[in-house]
Length: 130
Image 1 (cartoon, rainbow, N blue to C red):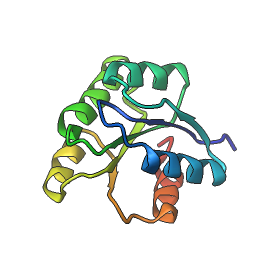
Image 2: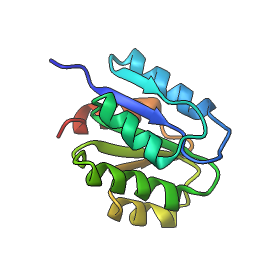
Image 3: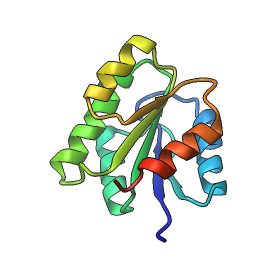
């Protein structure tokens, strides 16, 4: 069975990447291939990297409050480039009232502070590549 390939990205100016690194490590330890793009990525850079790396999932992390602009833009770019089948998930400080709007914009799941790593891993196993 093909390994699930996940791109973890930090869009925007948010400089806090501990959570993204913890999730990346957990997914890797669960047997997935993980690519971490590092800080300060533009939506264009993220979409391009996702396509070049042929990933199944893009995991976005944002703690700066710019998620409502940045996350939907990544989904939009993936769709424009013919890669709309890539699952996009999100994590970070995301107010509950924004979660339904992000779902409408194409974000498959949102993982906030306190979400267990087991829950994140299980979601990716069940939904990647569908």
